[in-house]
Length: 441
Ligand code: FAD
Image (cartoon, rainbow, N blue to C red; front, side, top):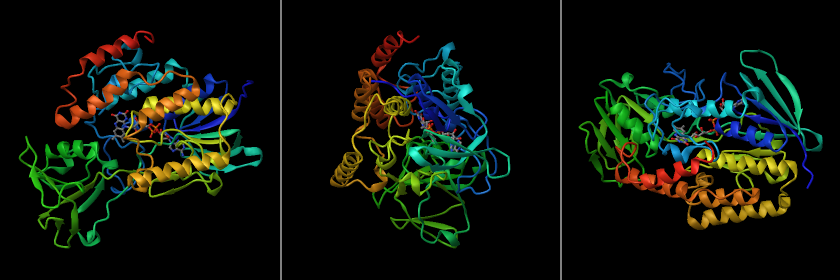
């Protein structure tokens, strides 16, 4: 089948944008990557502590990393499929731990960009302000140098691949009475270090990996830390093993003018800070109605296989929306698929068939009783999805060791929540991974 070479705009030079650029170029296209920051890495470009103008809002920084963050996936499983995230010179490694600090991931992404000569494709400090549909399915992209004034520059591209990440726009818990509550509220997006919480009483809302890590981090300096978790039964208030200042509660019922925060079990704490570790919202401020997608309760709708809006496919696509996944390999497979669809080597179903597929998927979610906001939560299906993408592209399925390692890490985390990053029982899988990596090293 003849292949078509297109001029493409990729928005973002995080892990998704980098691997998209590589796959698009491998397929013979000419991608231009727009990146607001001065460097590659996206989320992994740590922003040092600063007093945010709005501690509950997205603030000026993109990254949501805190200083002490170590990966929550073992490095062997985390890397791109053909560029292993091993502790070697090739990946610029300086932290050989199996669950390294965030700086190591940034070094890995920088090494990936250098190894595949991607930096020259990136327009740094250039923000995409608008993406507008033109005739013949093309898109006009308006971008502007960071710091410049004016309306920016418009260029026309054959297609746009959106890789702008989804861990920047905070999602906030609704707390009755909080407007009159005199304490300080903050979102984990703006959390960096525990020192500002010295001797304070802090309530952390959430049950995610970030809520777990941040509550422990803050407990190192705070007087008391109270975790409010909506999945904890109403009557529970449990001191956390190994800590004398950390408790797990049911969800917050209300906040009061006198500074008290009342939990659903009726108990109350006078608190200084409420830290919302309550996740993020998908946000595409540069897209208009002609993109044909809307975001409602964190469902990006409609998207065929979480990538293509049927009405404007394949000229608009999204890489990296699924969560509760191993992100980099999934981004890589989505990118291979998009690249081949754009070149015409893979043909998408008709618009109607894609819409039917989307509807059938929503019906399945409803039957399972999953809320809309879990549309892109892949906790039950990531490998099935990865393998479907791989089959589309004629690429091998995800390695068996990687699948097993993901599940083992989940069990280990549940069994050893405080120490899973330093103790594990799956060395045999590490050996399998290292054996497999030999073909790429
Ligand atoms: P991002 O990394 O967010 O990159 C998006 C890029 O787009 C950014 O560089 C941004 O500047 C740019 N951009 C956005 N809008 C525009 C615009 N309008 N114009 C120009 N540029 C724009 N993953 C793991 O694999 N392991 C982990 O242990 C892990 N831990 C995590 C911990 C935390 C606290 C968080 C928040 C995430 C974690 N992740 C982890 C997930 C992580 O987000 C993904 O690994 C991955 O980095 C996401 O890449 P991305 O390219 O989709 O988005």
